[in-house]
Image (cartoon, rainbow, N blue to C red; front, side, top):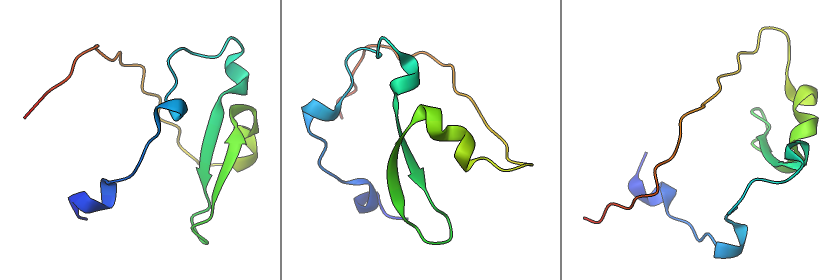
Length: 70
């Protein structure tokens, strides 16, 4: 992996400033492993992508409002 692999344009308009009032409507980006196809879904579609034996890991850490300059 190279650092350049993580360089991309991200318009400010795509950065969520506040959570949605109805959290179920949150967007979800899915990746089909065998084909590599990306798809834009909603969080309510999550169960369609899970199979028996899958493991879900939840990150409930908080983000501090800070920047690091180097």
